[in-house]
Image (cartoon, rainbow over all chains, first blue to last red; front, side):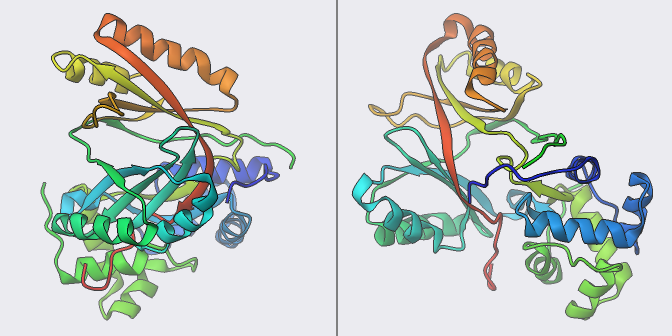
Length: 159
Length: 163
């Protein structure tokens, strides 16, 4: 899933950058968003499909802060030994509760985020993942959130 | 304004968590699927947004594809007395996308402050990490940077049917 650089033209970038910040809650939201981009609705829909197909966007839609509705996000980490790395990754990823998962250069080489609809479901999900992946998992629940605002601008480039 | 999602809100979350329909009238399409009107879909999403359950509707990029190759989780062992004031300061740095206090896991993991930084190369990221170190000053005992080497999954929230 770590993609090579994908060619992006100026319009792709304008779409990615504008729509990272938000999208209208109106009956024809693509048409309304297209006006701001100086294109038409059909062009915006076609470009979004292409950006998703090419893996430039992993998703287009609502981002829920499920903790405001009784759920939890929990950062977790484990050490997967080199000879079992891919099997451990597959076992972790098989769980729907795993929302994000990154390999990192550290003894704790796998870092993933659990997302559950009810706070009380965290422990059971963790236990299932530990059992399936057959590695001890450390949980790093957030104690305090100081800042969250991810905005990564796209700039035009060739592949 | 707190907002407690009911069963229909949760059905709406499940219907959209993988993505908004790519059709001209996506909220009408969702309403049809859930047996409610387009107006109600928009009203419910608006209420969830006002209550913070919905952060925003938007595009989620694969940052590697955009050229953001150096994604570092910087982690810091900061004096407990000072960590909250310093966490606010680090979180306010314009290049820090997420900043949290988390529990230490001694003896292996002494770090209690986590701050994500993104750059095109590790060389470009180095001065950003140095700025965090400068902001923390003497209250920080040690730190590390865990660079991501692969995105293994990035689906986001997937509520189960009974979730």
